[in-house]
Figure (spheres, rainbow, N blue to C red):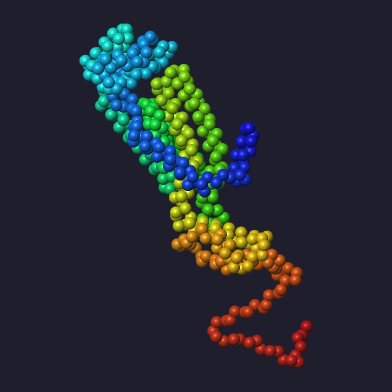
Length: 420
């Protein structure tokens, strides 16, 4: 299996096998558009469920092995607190109950403790209360947003310096794509956003950026000196770079996802969920999947769309189209059925029609008649003067001398012989 994957990677790198990612950008855009639309609707309708660390409140933790979920919820409601989140958490080998409430005053906290103690038979000394003020939670939220904005700004500046502005814009779009999808999944599934989630979110943005930079570095290598020729368009060179780094991207993603998936399973199945380890592993798993997808299917196609809008690359695409269409017309004339000049000209015009008009293109565009004449030239036409049986060209005319007069060499006397 590994040897086959290695052979496939070698063929992709050499261009023997190629997947045209860039030419199918409309399909990738449509898929991403649907996912982004679902994520945005989930964020607007359901919103994010922030933990107490962000919105402020109180967390009551106690051990009541014989109590049921309905009994705990009833005790909290009887204590005068509504809208509380009740869940079981694993702490070592013991199973505890955790009640998250809104911000409570001192008397409200004491009343709820007494009600839990009386209804569930729990000693008040065994009830742990963690209180987070709303001001501290709002400060944490603002700091997280500021860190995210600063991260994005620094990334754009770095990529603009290391590569160019269009690559920075493409990478920025891919990062926003991953950010919206990750937060949308949290809103859609109802996962709680904790401080560990923010840490994991910044981590996956860095991972996604790393994968994108690897692809862009290969794109820059493949497109160096591209404008001096007429063999490959920018999109074709970028698609080759994407194929050359495809196996590396897949291997890196799999190696990174396997330990994250193991951590997520341990945090959910063994530790019982609702802990910082689960929050971190969950956002990493979602973000790595989205980052791998965006670096392959979003970043490079967006970069090609931005580059192909530049006049020099549009002119390059036109030159490549003309060169390719001329070769195809010659092959048709040589190997295909006999075509009339009008039919051959129609084929040539169909080949170069998609190139369009480009302002500032270098040199006049060859007409369809010229391409037809070139393509319909017989294959047995003489290519050089030394070819046997070739028609000798006529005498070349000497250029006239300036001055308007023609100088003649004096003729020799008829009877005078040349001395040896």
